[in-house]
Image 1 (tube, rainbow, N blue to C red):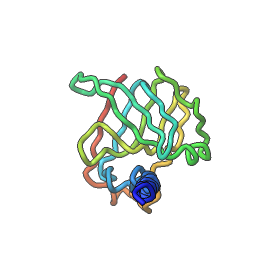
Image 2 (image 1 turned 30 degrees about the vertical axis):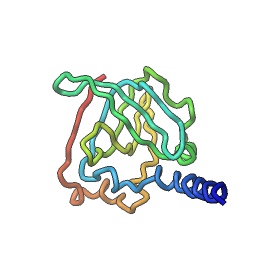
Image 3 (image 1 turned 120 degrees about the vertical axis):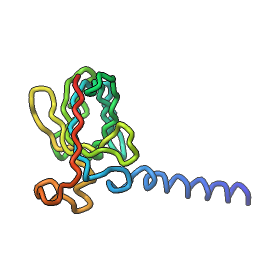
Amino acid sequence: MRQRLAGMALLLVASAMPALAHHPFAAEYDWKKPTTISGTVTKFDWGNPHAILVVKGTDEAGTAADWTIELGSPGNLTRLGWSTRQLKVGDTVSVDGWLAKNGKRQLSAKSVRAPGGRELAAASSFFDEGRSTAITDPAKQHETVSHSVRP
């Protein structure tokens, strides 16, 4: 009986993991704080539920910063023209996105400008929540914050 209960509990926890890992945009990011980060790729992790990009650069104060950038799911990125080899460690990129609410150096990417100048949509969950008008309607952009990070 105990083994059966333990097995059922394990299945319940395992089935909840994907739901815990995926979150709505508004839970972590502030659409009122768009930013652009430029720097050098130190990591590109092509995994579910989100691909992750880590960019190293220097902020205005001369402080080195590592930015964790959340991209969309590998499936969505593939549909938008990405591949697992899209970016390599050492590539210089520019990322447009929205800052995290918690003040950490992380953002949800709207787009990534790859080496060679090609701009790729990043499949942000921002667009899943019906806020796409905030990008095109200046009246809906409040408290714009811009952070520039140089490679």
